[in-house]
Image 1: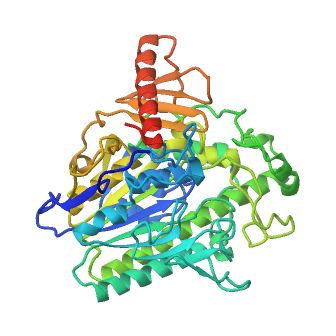
Image 2: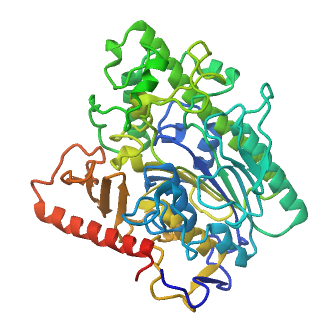
Image 3: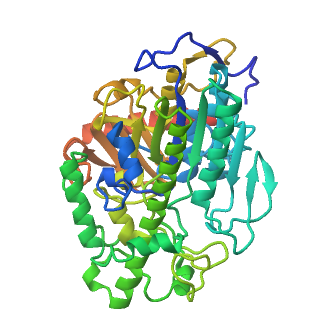
Length: 531
């Protein structure tokens, strides 16, 4: 890898930032990331799950209808906090390079807190990390980091400011979703008291609703009777609400009955018992025992999301009490689509344990994952729309003029960093940058925050575990697996990816394939440190 002749990237204040509302000072930023949340898993995106606090943020802000992640947890986090595609910075697989979940970012790809520091921001993190390096090295002034993702009630591995904390003692009244908001609330109270007038960047990374399905019993009780009608009925109801809300206009595709979990954990199925099913077969074909078990699982998933919403509401109430709510830009999104995985990790699954309790280890599975990702195809890890489409709520009362509006232009998690840097009044200086360093592909969303404009002119690119896609305007090519032929869809009329136009328009497929390959090769060069 080339030795850089100076600092890889210099960041300087660019004078006064170009705010959406000119009278607003530099905004505080609260970036909230859910884990394995489906496109329609909130009320304001058509779900039956009760999320009044997220709905309120959407009502006084904006909802994006065509925003994307990378289809997987760690690549999305890397892209979200650097503005690069994960492959460029070795955080998803690149041939011949140490990369993927164990990959280490190049020094020229710092995290957002480092980039915001010249604008006077202090940065705080609470929750999941799933990035390389420590949080303090990433620029966070305070951090409460959970590294045990298999225990909501008693994580064994956690850190504060990169110093290890003891495991949570069994029997303590602890639930991760609540605990991370408790800690972030403390950081922000201390910030307002100790650093008055200084803006903050807060990154709240929930584990919820990622498996294991675990939630406080009182939360599960509130929703336990909601899912008896089954996934076919619930999916159709969500699709109707999505159309009524104007979010997506197409009919949902037929359920792909042969598509189950993306990975084979057949040994897990034995411990989960006969009530678990690995394919989204019709609800009426399930036995009464299976229906009861599956309905319980979705109730726990819903309870986890409703608890997350309650905690978001508690944090927003705190910001308002501290007098900083109106000038805080809140962004809420998910790292990938809902998961069809079925596996058992951590301490294992006790079949005698109450579902959702500390001894239980259940996953949502493909039947309900298809509901969560309504009205799209496929699930987490795939790059069809169900795996990569995320809700994005943007709320900033002092700065965004829109109230309850939709934004239909395309965007991607790589666009978050340039957006926040522009709002903060920070620009990249080219001085001292080696010619081999990759430029950020992200594009600022400021124009979309102001008005409902069209798609970004640059293509959007995906590759994960052989699944690959590219979107340019309304056209998308997508394939499931290496060597699998491209499918072609016109997303203007078919975001359900039902009518494959590849045979009808081979020229367009060739052109988009060439763009996909060109980008892939440039990302490999960046990851290898070559110009």
